[in-house]
Length: 199
Image (cartoon, rainbow, N blue to C red; front, side, top):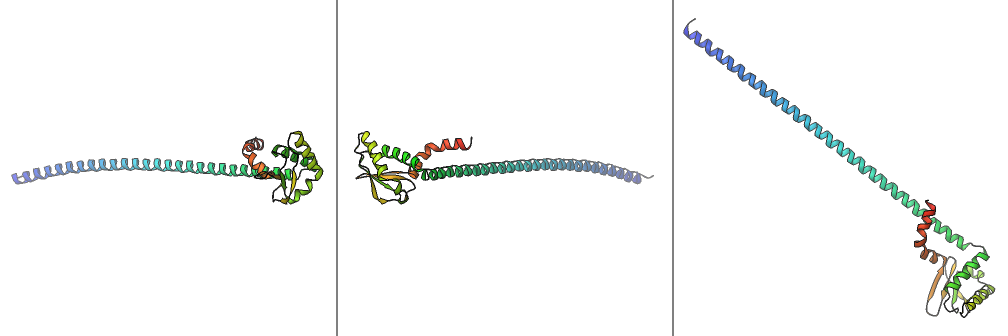
């Protein structure tokens, strides 16, 4: 083998060795890049899954909260309706009391409301028959026992009220109709009514 051939062989051998080193390094670098890319993709996938789970949990929590609020609102509305119905029924019962019971209640109310005993009693047209002369006389007798004048009279005028009466003095009117009395007492009575209804 001549010197030129040996030199060529040596150069080719070194080139091949260098090429193998370069290829080996490139393979290692490519493998490292692939490994890193796989790891980053796995990390990103895990992060996206975690975020998706968190969002799903948050949506579920919000949906549950909204459902609970809606349920509470519906329950509250039902309770209010039941309380309203109770007060409506109470007014109806007051309006339809038996005559003796009605007289007893109205007598008590008149004795409490009359200041001088000279007031006029204004009632609904449907209740005028309940305020007989004998009934007014009994009330006036009781007012006299209280030290008042005992001169209550039934006004010719009527009002559109649902039971009870309006007591008129020379300068004022006292609304003692059943709806007005229930309205005034409602704030105090409502907690008791609710406690009875929802115990």
